[in-house]
Image (cartoon, rainbow, N blue to C red; front, side, top):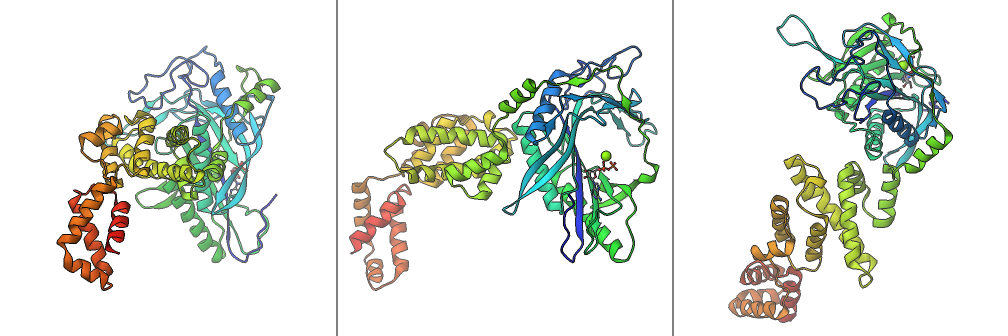
Amino acid sequence: MTEKNNTNSYTPVIGLEIHVQLKTKSKMFCDSPNNPDETVPNTNICEVCTAQPGTLPVANKEAIRLGTLLGLALNCKIANSSKFDRKSYFYPDLPKGYQISQYDKPIAEHGYLDINVDGVVKRIRIRRAHLEEDAGKNIHPEGLGYSLVDYNRAGTPLMEIVTEPDITSAKEARIFLEELRNIVRYIGAGSADMEKGTMRLEPNISVRKPGQQELPNYKVEVKNINSFKFAEAAIEYEIQRHIEMLSEGQTPKQVTMGWNEKASQTVEQRSKEEANDYRYFPDPDLPVLKLSEEYISNLKTSLPELPAAKRQRFKEEYALPDEDIQNLVNWKELTEYFEEVVSEIQAWIQADRSKEDLLKLVKMAANWCLQDFSALLNAAKINPSESRITQENFAELLKHIADAKISVTAAKQVFAKMFEHGGEPDHIIEDLGLSQISDTAAIESAVDQVIKANEKAVLDYKAGQQKSFGFLVGMAMKELKGKGNPSLVNEILKKRLE
Ligand code: ADP
Ligand code: MG
């Protein structure tokens, strides 16, 4: 299938190659720890991942499980029989002189991922996804005159995901990446963190000329992209560069570019003409990877609710705005927390309240999760599960706001205290003396006093000056030391003035 180009403009063609590091205890083919946060170089290594003579690889069962899960989540056909191949090239961070990868028989093929582009669902086909091992890292300390190698990462498990060239804008590429990141996190396959390098992107880019139907006969690959923002910027930069060249009758060279963060542009790294000949052949040290139908179908049933299904459910059950849903679902741990708060609300709201009340509270829960809670979590650099606010107390506080026991302003104060020290909202409200006055008699007496003391304002209001009403509300609130329930104060004042 080639995308029909029925416009008379330049149309970008983009295919992505993405490496996702799998979160296993040990490496792909040995029992050295797989720890992306290790800071001491060359500690998580052994004879196998540093390629000592006579050592043999053994495939990691958990990596195979996670890879299969990811393939299934991407709607791929999982191969009952796949194999590992040697991809040979020479580089100091690759101790064996070859990388163990999968060439012509990958573990997963022919999948797709549906993405939502401004409300329109677009299907991006996944050509293949295969298991492989990562290389180490070369380090070039400034001014030393020599380089160092850290093999901690050598042999850690990766899934490489390759899409068909179905993507037609930088924005679509970013949406695809974000959705993939979400999926990897939801199924527990990895942290998929571009900044930390546990998810790495190499986009391939070309541009069709107006009216051109077939795929362009060139493509440019971009490396060194380490954030979603740079992914979008790098692709956009390339698209514009190609359009400029094509409109001058030139064809961009088939090269590998690198994203230069400081200059906000891509720079040529090497030309594809000198591309390596990898001399792939089956790794004789590893058996064919056989997965039974039962194994595959068990994993398929074990898949959790994926982001797209969750978004759909949030829309149907909670009627939340799309943007809230998107923002919640993009943070897996926050979504889990939110759902626990909602179930607390549901348990408490029971039958005596309407569906409307429930939805109002759920919307409130979403707002508090996305605003105050997110801000505090981000400032403290922690995840929701690490916060001192229990889901029960979170729900309790929302209930007090809904029941007008405290004002929203006061609730923010209580929330901050809860975040800092934990504790129940009732106690904190009492300690801080924040509970809101909803006692009608108390409000009436305050209102009466204010009316008596402000004759002129009362007359002005009766003469039609709305401003005076606001003034009288302010005075009544002052009388109530700021704790009057605002809607009650308004209501009672209006009645008394009639
Ligand atoms: P190669 O053999 O050079 O690695 P592949 O055919 O394996 O190329 O494709 C690698 C990636 O490039 C895939 O993600 C694919 O979708 C993408 N791709 C293929 N052709 C184009 C093109 N004309 N423009 C942009 N991306 C492309
Ligand atoms: Mg390729």
